[in-house]
Image (cartoon, rainbow, N blue to C red):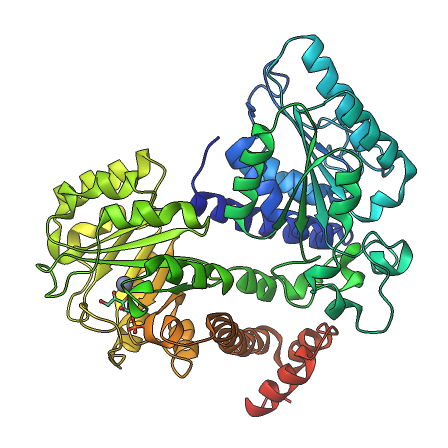
Length: 555
Ligand code: DX5
Ligand code: ZN
């Protein structure tokens, strides 16, 4: 399908919501493993898999084989989003007579494999891959396998077979979430180093202990290891895997079971349990509240921007914010597209290009060619016609579209017709021109009001807070409705970028937890608040939630 980063992200979100909808109506099902593979499925479906939802039997299609069949809600939800059937079909999940069963079944057009008995999807995939070669077809097989099912001996027999027959038209993705039905994988049958003690969920955050890749390497496979929730890493890995000829490839994706809903994350209970219907609106709000941290490299050493990009990469930034200034729209100059092109090969992190330049329409192609994932231009230097041109050019090149407004500018009238297709709106909270300025307080109010207006006009992108964002105000910016946070002096200006990014995230999470408790209270008073809090059994979240609820007077 070839969608861009932003579109994949939107589809992944929608698919997660459908998993919640389907399993909560069914009263059973497997949300945990559906969520650990959500980004993996999104990248395969919307960027790599060749398919036609209107003609599921299309001869030249690729095949997606879900070996970990119990995660069928994660497959069906994407099939709905991709257009195989109506989203409302998810309401029939696991019902008698429905084509959407607890495990995928060929009765559902588009399903390639009856998953359920674990450990056999890879063997089946190898058969399909070899058959495609015999038929001289350009079919690619994508197989998603769980770590729990890696206990099966058949998996390792298949591993040897794929290497023997040089099966290179198959990409295996291991959803390495460290949890299987009964407990943590490392307790049941360690794939990595044997881990002892009670703090297992902490121990496996230590990447030096991960040995699964060595096993596959020794079986003759090309091994790629990624963070399985980063779209850009998965997509890049899928490209790299496909380009390796003569041997099979496995992508080991480090994931979190139940990812994106805090109380499900890393919690074995959510392997196979449905969310309670009363909590679905709170869960949906949580899913809608994903956020991204975007360090701005101009706050670093301008003579060594390569190193600044590296610091963002090491710090696990979500985006890299690139402030382009031309000395005309703003008094300062920074860099232009040539520098961005030079920096592009250094990382796969999305490039969030913010053009503070006059007549952006004349330059837009250069910034697309330089490898931007999104380009944001200023409303002050556009009109309906030039922005229309920019918008169309970006869309047709699969680059995200952003519009920025200065502190004293409102969204222009002409922007209305573009709002529903904008990926981002930057609300400047300093006068653009340099980093290190103080946040202009009335931006909070402005963002809140804008948010209401944008929702009415079908905005489905993110608001980016840019300028003077700090640990002290980031929580409020999130509450206003911003979801992307630029950090110049407060992130890049600091020595330990990784630590500051973590602090930024924790600060936002605290506000988010508070908003979700408020939502639970709104919907069901103290009873629902307590029900919500009680779900958070892993780590220290529960104590913090209790403290927030007490502060709010809900307990
Ligand atoms: C301002 C830029 C911002 C800014 C961020 O013109 O668009 O991205 O430099 O830096 P801080 O966070 O220091 O304000
Ligand atoms: Zn900026």
